[in-house]
Amino acid sequence: MGLDDIKLKVSLITDENGYLGRECPIEECKGYFKVLVGTGLEGVGYSYCPYCGHKGDHNTFYTQDQMEYIRSAALNAISDELGKQLKKMEFSTRPSGPFGISISLKHEHGRRIPIHRYKEKALETYVECPNCGLKYAVYGVFGFCPDCGQHNSLEIFRKSLELIEKMLEMAASVEPDLAAKLVEDALENCVSEFDGFGRELCHRYAQKSSDPVKAERISFQNLEVAKQGLATLYGIDMEEGVSEGEWKDAIRWFQKRHLLSHSMGVVDEEHIRKANDNSAILGRKVIIEAEEVRQLMGGLGKLADFTYRKITHL
Image (tube, rainbow, N blue to C red):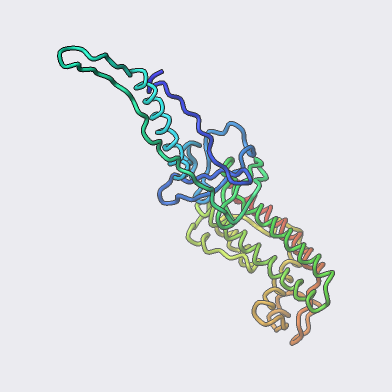
């Protein structure tokens, strides 16, 4: 076998949980992420970058550390094979001629090239794609699935609702003042998580809108404003995602959250006018029940499903 016949198989290093590092090949991105080996689609020859959405050949997503590791392993393999070839060429002759000259060739193997060792980086968010089953990890929160390309905004929102439910469960087992605070925080989290979901969805699919610049700036903290924005930019009537009663209830609970954020929860005239809240008394603190938050979670789950489906299928 010669140098041209060398075949080298290198097993890449995973982290302690079996995740393999990947890196976007696009120079402007170079985003680092990880995938769990053995999950997701089988035999896929391409990958998506979770951050910028670039789709490319699977073999173009090696990290710099992995490339250095492969390079050092390959150079050692070549060096070893070269040493074997030179070893075969060794010879020596006995002294001859009037001066007793002998000739010999002997190969002495030099120092091996150090193997480049590395450790995969820690990341912030671990996700399992509901579409293809790939488990992957990214910096930040949102991203495209590296196997099927589906954006994870809906999955992240669902996870956030699960955490909010845990807050409500905790509220049922603590003293009243703390329980009230937990319920208020749960309501605020519902709205902020829905806003984050909607903003990210419109950001990722801004090019599908009639005005990408405005799509990048849309807010979901006010349902009526969000409804108008989606209708103008995407031709979607978000209210169709829930019943008439669910929509009115969601408007009322969003208004309650507005009071918490802007007036310490004290009912003002704007709330009386907009919220259709029979329990509200001007100048008193707004009443927020855990069951109300649960109902809002259900309604927002439907609105998120509807909006995601409509935008991604445009």
